[in-house]
Image (cartoon, rainbow, N blue to C red; front, side):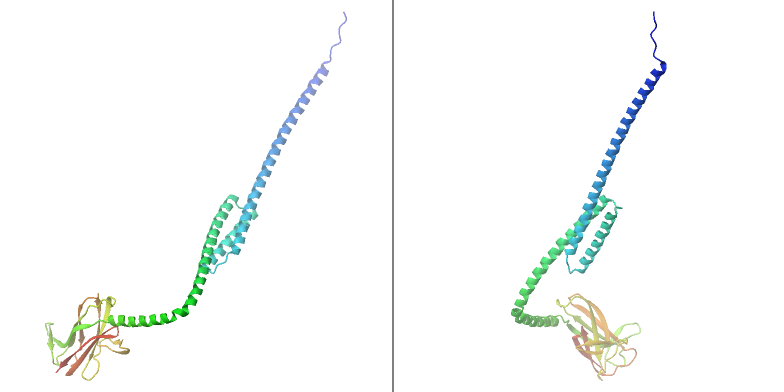
Length: 304
């Protein structure tokens, strides 16, 4: 029996290696294909992101540009509002520069742009309202000018009547002093004040009266000025060197002054003048009391 020839071992090994290479090649191709698809998806996603960002950037920029155009159309004569609007325009320009440079968060930029647009809408409404008011005022002004000639005579009559009423009020607001009495005093060693009619003993002059009720004059502090005029016509001067005041349209000296809290009700008042140690001449003394430049009362007394 004849033996068949056997396959060489080296040929079997070559086939195995070739098969392994084919399998590796197929695997590598599959891996490369998967990686290629992943890269393609990433590129598409990146491109989509870039497109979205660019679109958002353009939208925000367009919004800001439209706002600038609207601001340019706004006009107002209000200096404070104009200054604020100029400041807001600068904010819009600054925000638009940041967006165009691409170094600013677009979400934050959109929020700021929306806020600025709301403020701008508020100015639009305000300016529109002011314009409407101005137009109404202009129309009213025209009407007023047309009527001015008709009411001039009435106005003059009312002014004359008002002046007359004011004069009556001024006259009615003058205070009046009742029961006014004046006399000289000297002071005993125990401090007691005693009336005297002798000029050689007189150390003080006392004047007492009652300010009557007056509901027209304003309540509050009232400054009373007393002038004591001696027999020779001279004023017994006050110790205070600043003893001049205006009364009845002229300036003169007063002898003594006093502040009184007047509440529109009767109040008793006394004023005292100190002689300072000098003797008073005999004769008639005239005493006048003034408030707000108007005489409220007068009296006389005599010394021997």
